[in-house]
Image (cartoon, rainbow, N blue to C red; front, side, top):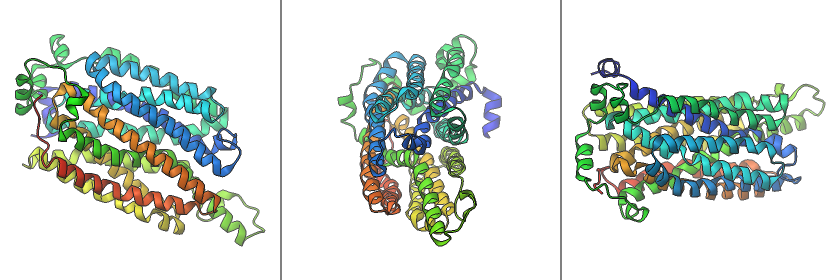
Length: 467
């Protein structure tokens, strides 16, 4: 039965919920991307100090403030959302991160920025645990990866909208307004969330969800058996969850691969701006009498446009990443093999980024191409690794396990931010910052295949456990 015929027969209410989660994730990444895009402006304004080499390390400190707070937030927010429910948990998280995003406008040095970045981190931590829990509540296994891919593509849409708007807002009205206006967007979403979201059971009782769609959502036999076996509804502690290899497989996968996305998110604009600066310097050294504009120098690109291109490609990767295992399952492959096969394929594509620095020396657009492929592969990988949680755990623990894995990813992000800061400070002082980026790209390239191998060794099959 085709995707469209299923929707015609049973209804589309679950896709309305997916659209709401997509919008929230878009807003999440719009707010998160502003800092990286304004790094050159903030550095020029002296926010990260007067010394150019120190600016790299100070910027990494601000990024780390976000990562630490995000990790701490994820440690607690998943459990909180499992307790208070998806609707309230998601709403309060978005209210918090919207205020924190606006607060950046009132920071004018490294540590005040660090404070607001930490506030953003702890509140944004609620997005993915709440989103993953909502998907587990509203979708059967066969559709979860696709639904996750769709909502997760909101991260890319936010990252596309940001470079197409933020630099121009900052240029027209000042960098402070870039934070204020993007931060205020979230409050619009709240009205739709409170009006449209409820659990499938509540929607069925109110007559807004058909019985056919309700039954389709709850059509996984093994999952329903696990839910029925859990008759006591015993609360599950973090310590209990950490005794399962399934938890550690998710933790390892997130720890090794989330930092790669963080690196591109926070350093891609700086890398591309640096490539432009390097080409300008080389051209002017060879043509000392040049009087034209920098934009006309061969090899110089519009880096905000390039960043938008990277995340456009990433959007396609996210959607394809959800579609491929669904295609495998519809073709007769069991869900475990479909998920594992898709993740293996997606783990291979980031290896292209090993060529980013070398190709960038020839033409910056070549580097942009390899990074776009790597980011698309990350998003395809991401929607599948999120889905492994609902594949392996009962719904009552999905947000908690997502939070534990997300915390591991944030810890990895802290490590990669410090590594990037130290490497780039060192090579900036030597006048060879491209070498530092080259080392970072090696780390980015091999992370996914390493993660897939370790996850496979820990959990050969994504089998549902009974708690």
